[in-house]
Image 1: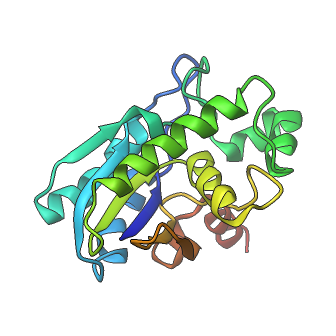
Image 2: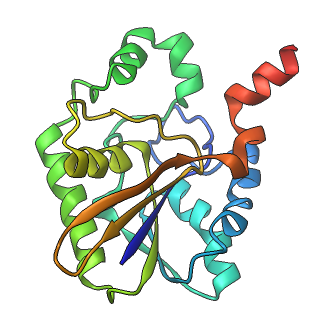
Length: 204
């Protein structure tokens, strides 16, 4: 079966909740997802139970006439934090934490093994429930996608891959149990809506 992992779109900043809704730009990003995965015969739409992932999944579910199925096991490592700061702001305001993440490490307060265990258990159940010909879309988070990639590829760092807003990463699971990574961080469909590209365009 094929697992199509989509990172959530850009959320709002929140000083009080780790579960904010999408920002206006994030809503625009999410509307690009159905077209980006239209070539795949998606039979199920699963999402992290965090609002930013559910809202990103909704346009695809609506297009396909499916229901978004939330799963709390594939929520992000920050789900119990006291707020949410998009990485673009964290780069300026929380430089030490930003540098740690960019170096491939989870924040110090995160229990890495617990996070890894719940994510991989959630993914395993999604895969085991699918027929071998199914394609399932999973809307989740950069940390979640990285945990799965590290487990398959045995890369040294937990956060070894840049995973952009609404990017698509595809993983294939064979009936023998073999896993292979087909693509990582496909962003062509939202390239012009990624904050770093918008900033470079506006400054040029």
